[in-house]
Image (cartoon, rainbow, N blue to C red; front, side, top):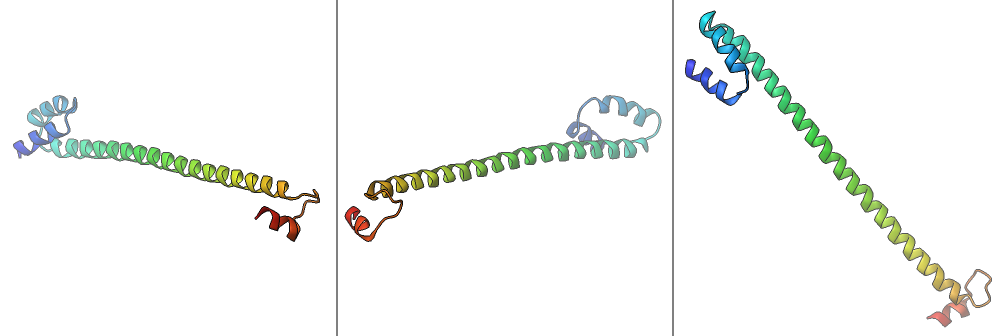
Length: 108
């Protein structure tokens, strides 16, 4: 039991083993159960909070990448529409805003 406690001290090290060991050795070994439960809970909570922050940041970056991809695609489509509009304006010889069959056949 003492070796398990020592391994737990090493694993979850910090300043708590220095404070807990005298209480466990001089008062009662039953305090080990309370202290270990507390330390495991706190360490687990810190790991969960750290993991949550990491996942949140990763999701924000992924969402940002998606938004940028959509914006780039929209710019590409807008550029394509402008080029086609320019071509049809050049083909519209009488400038009435519509291509007749003859005007369309000229640009082909």
